Length: 114
Image (cartoon, rainbow, N blue to C red; front, side, top):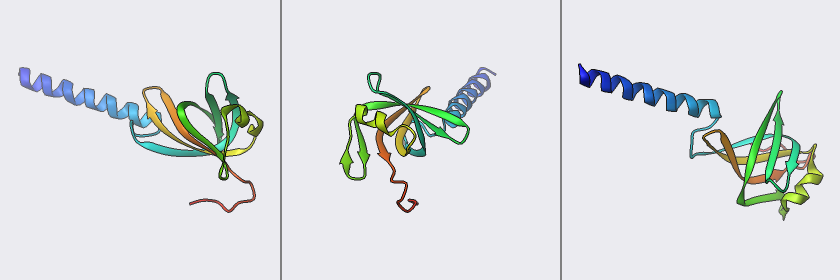
């Protein structure tokens, strides 16, 4: 009986972890991409927010995050001038946080990327 109870608790714990990963929008530890309109930049806090549809998604920029417009690197402060532009962000979901290691400001005249 005790073995059955322990297995049941282990299964429930696994389900909670899996549900949390799905709610975060990405598998923990695995990089994902999101695109949308840049709506807010906090250079001091290294935070950016992107609107995708009717949701606004916050991201924390890692220390080594690459920020690019085309091939040109930008600083977080430079990114503030791009609020309202479309961006692509590569991030990793952790518990309650999206850590972005790459931000690409998209050229509105460029062909869409697959």
